Image (cartoon, rainbow, N blue to C red):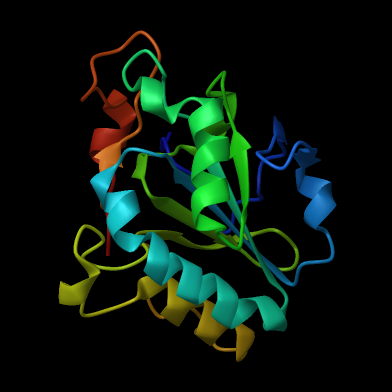
Length: 195
């Protein structure tokens, strides 16, 4: 069985607190024509390096009914700066155009099969997975990127086209799991096959 969600599978539900003081679940986004759920954190250089490109993508597609939801699941034992107060402070500083949810138990990261930060999942209006993987091909230094896979997938979907590349390898720091070495990844995650 694959560790991460497979193309065509349904979005798992969640109920998580956000930095805006509210708690959100999947059904709160029923009005969105497409939903981008991505796993992220505060400290990762791949996240920090690509957040502004992610912002541009979110702002570009928001008028077309696309909702972005970020989730941080990292163990604060490994990286204390990934805790909820730092999440609140980061959102206040950067005013990102997405909700920022905290998955303290890591249960949501497990059911989605989050591998790295950032790791993107794009769901259609029926909440079936149509794209998963990286946002761009050089998230640590977007001045060197040559492709924005997330932008392409959303543009293709919203224009009624099939997703030309529905699966890419997420690029970034691995998710920091509770009780594990900082670089540990589930064994099943090592068997992924990408087109």
